[in-house]
Image 1 (cartoon, rainbow, N blue to C red):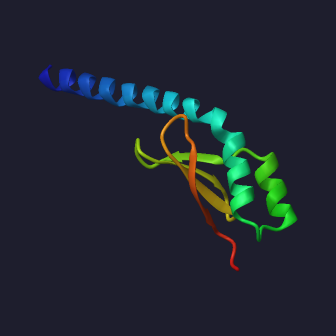
Image 2 (spheres, rainbow, N blue to C red; image 1 turned 90 degrees about the vertical axis):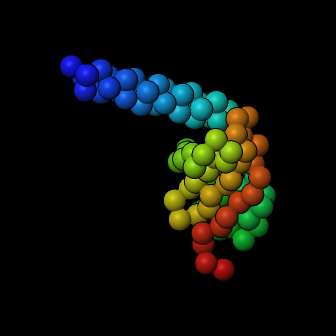
Length: 97
């Protein structure tokens, strides 16, 4: 019975963390247009097709910690931002030069 209580507490803690992560990501969604503009303006060597991908597709949104949020377009670039409201801080281009 004691182990069941510990398991219940553990599950409650884990599920509450998932809810807050979902909210954290939701709070970053409004920043996507600014992140797109930042990526395009800070990577002048992007091809026109890469610019089109950034401008028209949703980035993947990954949170490394509550200090930085990473928005990414696969094999093109990753934009690092602060926590919500997720103002862009830097961009990493993944295309070879």
